Image (tube, chains in turn green, blue):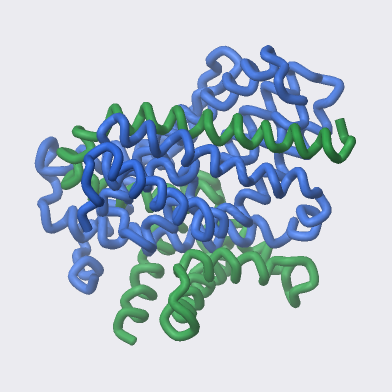
Length: 148
Length: 265
């Protein structure tokens, strides 16, 4: 139970920081974005609880799925929830994550220095590989379906 | 984790980093057919990294441990937002057809090329994190959940994530224009494939393709957006059920070939 309370506290801290960034960078007032942020934090806590008490699937799977279900057409109040969360800019959510990661990165710097240029090379191949493979499959399937 | 929560200093530092980065905002530079886009999270990670004992000495080893212990959880708010991006379009995506779904298996191309190259370059467990997927937010969150982001796998996925963020848009814009010159694939296929990465990568690709094929622009854009939304929906399932287990298997086989011994635990 302690772990869950701890998670909730971290989420609240990050939510508060995000609201400030969301105000500065994207012009959504803190009060205006509050309901959406509350929904997002609620989804996360549900995800943590499900991971703990339902089945040990990765928390992220629960969180994405719950977020999707409650905004699906036909789910009660889906439009209201979607309108609330739209006041929390997507990019505003990424900045605090990378800020925490950045502060923590210092201790990995020796390891990063060792792998750094290799990772850059790998990432170029990863991006090309994914793009070309996906385009190839899409091309074949579209042809098969007679769309092109 | 309790000690990390009580470390008020790091939360205040993060707040300052966020405020400063958001004040600067998004910067865009046109380069050839692509766009170099710098977004606030990049400033935050770079300034954050400079706070360590090597440079500005604002944070000590303990602070750094605390900060990285929290990253995995901070990602969850973003993942919740991700779910809510997909939900409203769920049924449109279902209608978008089998081509959209099947092209998602292009992810497997990533690991078949990426893992051997990463290991050839001398990476070990970093290879699995770096090359199991195209390393967008859901993939980072998944690796964080399973291995922790301060593990070798975590370093790998974060490295590719950051590279993708910095160079991704321009790289994808360029690749799409190059492929259209080669004329191997139909423009619609190129448009669908643009969805594999982040929204900004997709936007850059669609932008270049629409400029090259103005009379097909409408359909190109629709395919790009649908595919990108679909990646958001199934990317995490695809990673967990197919790409990550396959990556680990491939890693084990290549490890035995390269080092002549079974991988150490």
